[in-house]
Length: 144
Image (cartoon, rainbow, N blue to C red):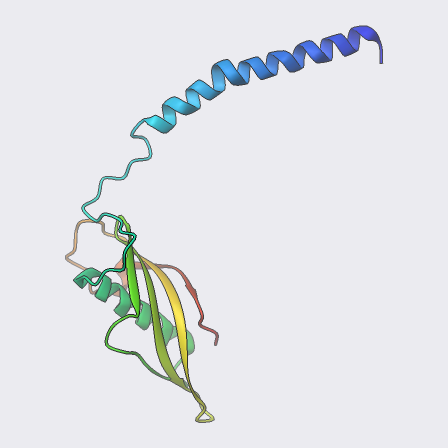
């Protein structure tokens, strides 16, 4: 490599670092400090487990999903309430529960699961009991 190419490489590298430091990063800080990513919702997140009517309906919807995933051959029973439920804010819930399952061969067992579920209609709670208005983000602990 020629000496002029090395010098050009170093100058370009310095210009890239300066543009990153003086142009890109200040812009990123302004975007992060703005209200661009703020979601205004009546449902606030909580680090503590909750038991509200909405979390109970979220538990019921998770149970409905689990029953449909296990199929008609399995007999599934759920307790009256979840072990724990947390609100993640903006009508998104994390449900930790358990269920009893009996399969075709009459094998019975209890399983624990975690379900992340979101109510799609935000503050409009008119269709809260309709499963179509809920979205299952993910479920762990359930195998067919």
